[in-house]
Image 1 (cartoon, rainbow, N blue to C red):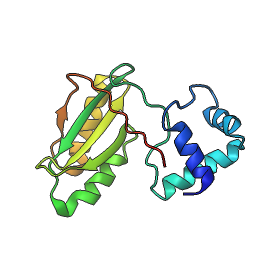
Image 2 (tube, rainbow, N blue to C red):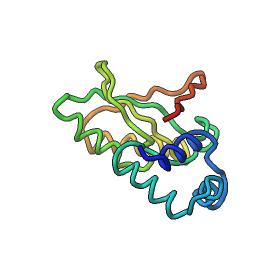
Image 3 (cartoon, one colour):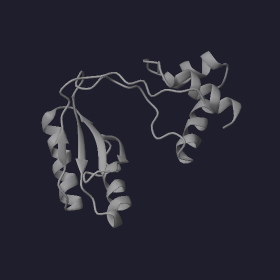
Image 4 (cartoon, rainbow, N blue to C red):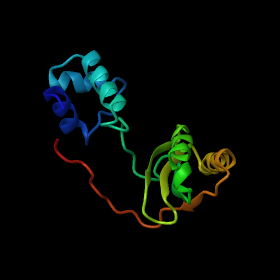
Length: 146
């Protein structure tokens, strides 16, 4: 990673600006241009160093969300993961060593919208989606210096 990439990532893994032009606020705080911040983040995403850039909102405080999992044959895993990730309501997905081997977090405006996305994923993939709703919240800080 370049020095500018490190500065952006280290400063904004937490505390993403909540304002109309968050990337301008980031640029101003770092002494950079908004265009450079946007281009740098786009490049990091394109290189798959970052999977997502944006604010993180506590589960079920705005709209509705759920953790979900699927049992996907290994030969179909990449294809199904891409189908799941194509839905804008899906924040991220990841492979696990378990019979439910593809897990993802889904967030939408309300419970009905969550269920609709689950139905679409099941129809597109031909596979069942198992919901794993939040019962108790634990804060895990996944940020680290790069």
